[in-house]
Image 1 (cartoon, rainbow, N blue to C red):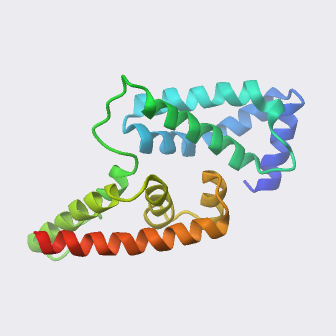
Image 2: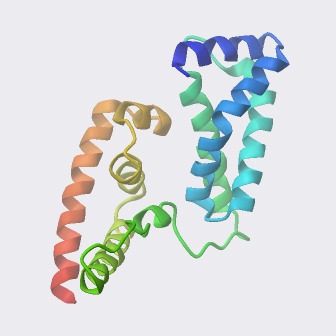
Amino acid sequence: MDEDRIRSLAKAVQDGDEDSFCLVVEFFTRPLMAMAYRYSGDWDWSRDLTQETWIKVHQRIDQWDPGRSFTSWIYAIHRNGCIDFLRKGWVRLETTPGDEIVTRESGSAEGGPDQELERREFHALLKQAVGRLSETQRQVFLRVDLEQGDQRSVAETLGIKFGTLRTTLHFARKRLATILRELEKST
């Protein structure tokens, strides 16, 4: 669904059309759940966080400016809810956002056990290196390089300028290369 169609549905939701709200929910729920899972590492929490986002969207739809991207607006609400979730003192996660992306298995182990062992060792090093990036660099790197997200969309979602995203991505990649070299030397 393109942004113009999303914007027209969101405008209809502002005007009280519940059918349009159902279509918006249907379109965005899956990516919001995936985003919440990156933060929480738990599907039950992801469902709860996504449901809370829909409640906030329904309550605040009159605050959305039709001249701006609805997609960016909803992702900003969701991201802020996920970050608030992590800030709660009673939440203790064993992973940081994006760990499952970094450690994702690449599929079949072509080349035998030696290459599979090397791949796993590299994933462990990459996970450790990503953990040493700043929060902004980590978010940009995970969303653009590992999730293959569109840079302009990621910039909108994170609420930063496109040029800032590109600069942050450049320095994140450069820092990762330095960290990976250090880690490889120490092992």
